[in-house]
Length: 163
Image 1: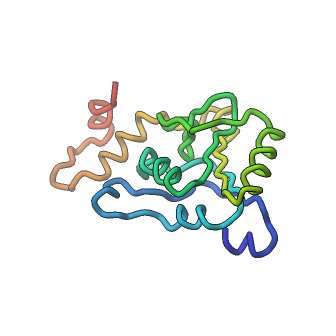
Image 2: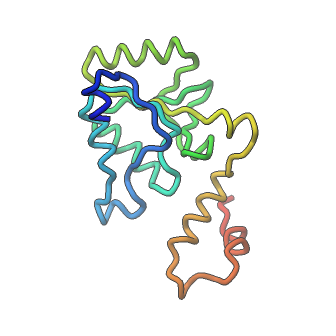
Image 3: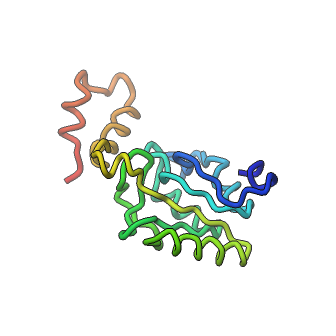
């Protein structure tokens, strides 16, 4: 981000951004991406926060840092990298390229940074996305200690899907 800005680039695109790690409320493990986003006057277009992270706390932390977060599309559904929905809402949404451009110009005029989260067209149009309920269960399973983990991951995930 910083190098892009210093090179005169005002809009930077990336896959998924980092964020507050699960358990970050006790470990204070937060990706440097967030701090950089708050101080570099650049608009970042991404596929949202990486799904293995604590998306809710990441959105709260971005708000604390003064970063404008918007979802691109008709809804405020916040994407999670390879999932079009994360079960979290963006504070606002923009529905067109023109509206996105106006938001970016407006925020940059005030010295604020923008994170524009876009659902991947591949995921939305071709239905290659993972349902966020499965992703959450898979992350929970991966965090289990090896002695606690049952032998069949898919059975465990199926039994532990949120309703």
